[in-house]
Image (cartoon, rainbow, N blue to C red; front, side):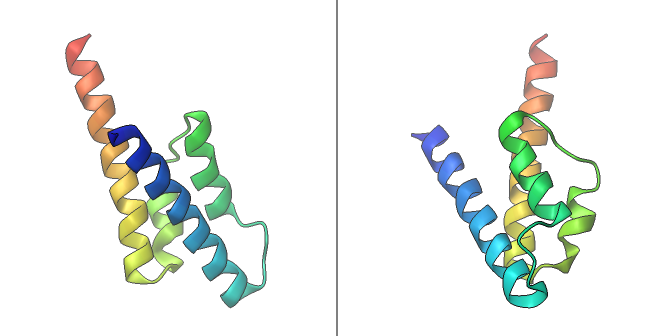
Length: 81
């Protein structure tokens, strides 16, 4: 159940960011979107939160939540190994 929630949360975040970038910049391809989509492939870019500063606060917080969860997971994994 938790995995489904995180998947849906991240998918919704990408959609919100894509919509915001389109509405404000009329771009379909943007570095922030590439970074968010890279998470699906296991990439977590150092500059993701910096790039996300262009977003409205609520959308920024969604990106921040995802980054926090990933970092917590990495920490837990490293502590077990």
